[in-house]
Image 1: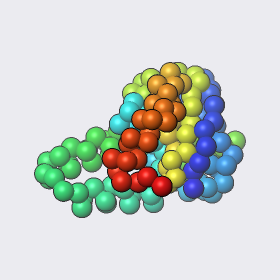
Image 2 (image 1 turned 45 degrees about the vertical axis):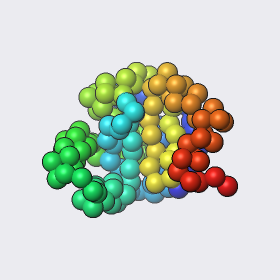
Image 3 (image 1 turned 180 degrees about the horizontal axis):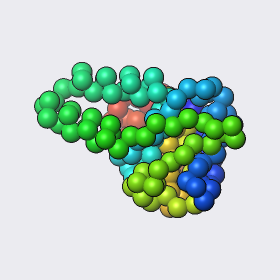
Image 4 (image 1 turned 135 degrees about the vertical axis):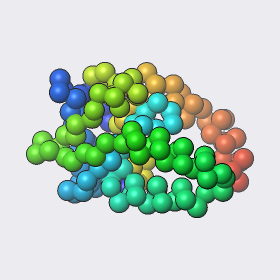
Length: 145
C-alpha cells in the first residue's frame, strides 16, 4: 500500500528516485505512468493499472465517453521500471503535462502514487487541511464516523 508524502527531485535526464517505502511495494513490478485529472501524474503497478482500465468498461455512461477516457490515458501512458538506484524515467511530455521541473512531491494513494508540482500540491493540500470542508465532503458521502 502506498502511503505518505515525500519531496524528491528529477535529475538532468528526467529520472526520479522513488521513495524507499514505495520501492518495497513495487518489488520488481513494471509500472505505468499516466497523466491524471488534477495536472499530476499517477504511477500504477502494471496489474493495478490493467484492473483500473478494465473497471472503466463497467461504468455507467456512454461508450463514447469511456473510449475517450481510455484513449486519453492509454495514448499518454508510459511504461517504467525501477533502475538499480530506485529511479524511474519520466518522459518530457508527461513532465510538461504536470508542470514538473526539478522538485516534486510524491504522495501515496493506496494502490498507486502521485507525482505533483509542489505549487499544485500546495493548493490541493490547503483544501485537504480544511477540516470543515473535509467534514462536509464526508457528510455528503455519508461517511461520517
